[in-house]
Image 1 (cartoon, rainbow, N blue to C red):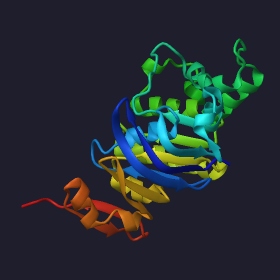
Image 2: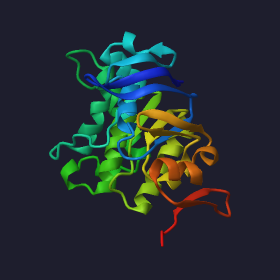
Image 3: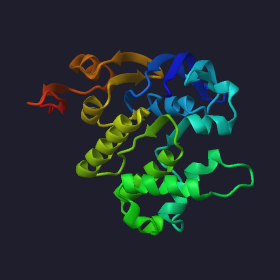
Image 4: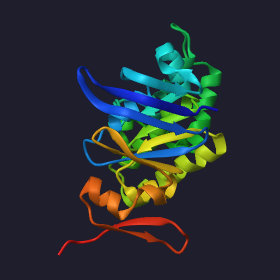
Length: 258
């Protein structure tokens, strides 16, 4: 199974450095949530993990250096769902999910029975089978998010990178999406790295949290050790109380300033 390791990574856009000396390791089957204030470099870090940006330092997926891999080899190891994916309104759910099989096809090959079987299985797991023939433009926000997840799961990659997977979803649909990701992770042993704005969701679903600020890791570890009042005040400028539910789950509660 695919784990992920970054060591002393620097990355950015052209001559503008965004990330500085980022070191993190995600074990196989783990879930790391990347959090931080706006402009901290969260999406840049996820793009670097996906091998979409040049980087100094070491980026390894499944023990293999990304800089040594072709785009097809990386796509077989890593499935990436950006925050604002291109969703052609006229394409059906099935055809969109089939795009996830592209890394496994030859240059001129078309999808075969095995690829269709994989997509059919994924659509059933995501409760999308009834929408298989629907065009993306006719779907609700939550259904479209599940279609994006179907495409990345169809890649059958061991490492799943998700940039704000709950964007635009209400609390019920957001919770359902994260429950689904967690269930699939546990069933398949997939390694998950996601950015999340909602700190309560991050605390409750991720095994570990990485707090990023100004392109640097300022804290990393168990949610209870990272999502503390002093750290949130220092890096978010937020006044918050860290609560614990009856079931032992963390809740990050903003406190109104008077």
